[in-house]
Length: 187
Image (cartoon, rainbow, N blue to C red; front, side, top):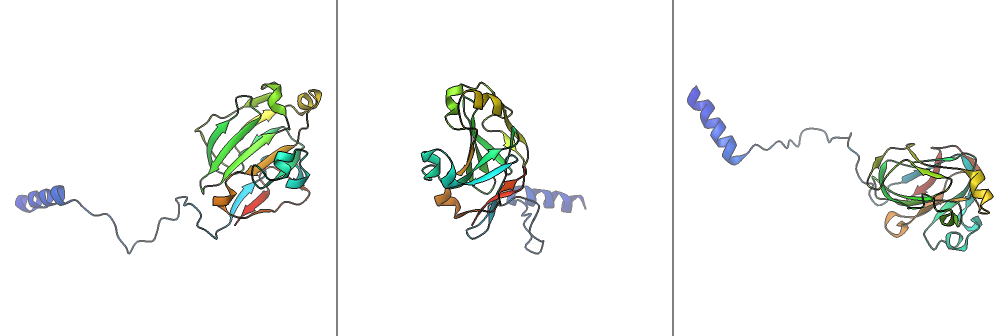
């Protein structure tokens, strides 16, 4: 009996043990990147009035130079994660954040227009680059009053910056959305 145990151990040690079993169901709990043709979703990062991309009062965003997306006139001052993913960039001036979703979408959320000139005044970040976030996690808070006092528009741009790789973007929201309502769909 000891010989059988020892022989089994030695054979397993040198040749390994294959844990793969094709008869078991596939693990459905793990997040998997979306495949071409599967819909991906960007949820509203804050409560707002929705603007089509061409109505953002900034030609760089309105003409889609940065990519497709939409604008929003915020009715709240907390920007939340529009999906689960990783923070890829936080602007030094705290007015913008870049995120990469678990299924490969890259989204830029830019708070206000020309707010880079505020040098972070009126903005507070709650995340850092490389940090994992879940849908609805707080990213940035800002003061709409300070943005307006500085003479800038408080319009927030939500832009898919890798649409060529991610797919066709469709605006799914009506005139207004609440945080975490469906905003954009990517096919």
